Image (tube, rainbow, N blue to C red; front, top):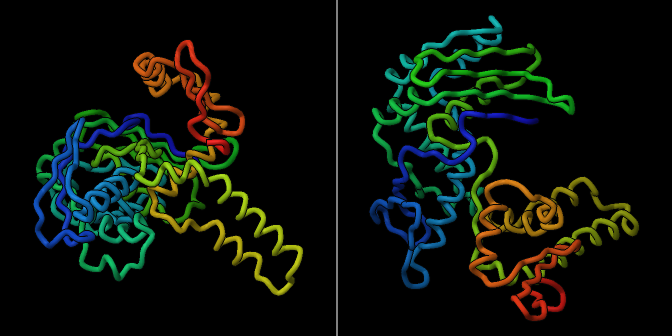
Length: 317
């Protein structure tokens, strides 16, 4: 599945205020956090810093599986008619509080997945996005939207949602009748439009565990591969499908799992020579007084000016 949301290609939240509650060691009312372009979260060990940052990461990657009000009815009408002009501003005005509550509840349900922990640990936990309901409606109305859902290798367009900036009408087109759970797709697309989240993950978190991960991430991947190979050869009583699911399922919190994915992808990342992050990396090289290089195996080497290379990440570290 491929989606394209041209109107929101980067994080553009109208509010960066969040209110955690009973998250980790935090009590029921620890206060409100407003994040700025540069925010330092300081404190002693075991005071909840990592819990808050992981929860923020989870929200910025996906607010969770949510069902916005009246989406089932809208989906049924869209499936029946194929094309609709939807009174978006009227829907916002009638459901502003319910929309906010839907986002809060979805994030609450998402917390166990973010931390990859038992749901019972988070039964009283919350990480609420704080925004005035009227402001949410104003921002949703002011933004343009161009959502296109495409499936298959040929990227055939299946669903289109468009809106001009400042226009109170959203135009929807369902280009196939054989499409499951239209209500969920509509809810997710509209929620991302309101919150200001792009369709692809645009958040990068460097976990405190990164030093250890740099040393052992290849060994973790190799052991998983060896385990699957050994099981398929030696023991016919093993449920291979279940084994694959167990091995593929990460046992780490989402930020750590995504960081490991990034490490495994480094050989491909090194080939990318365009984009804002490449330009930023070029500026970092000027400050660092040398250059960073990633070899074909993903090892990172720093070469100071007029000096020998120093391996920063790899087997011989």
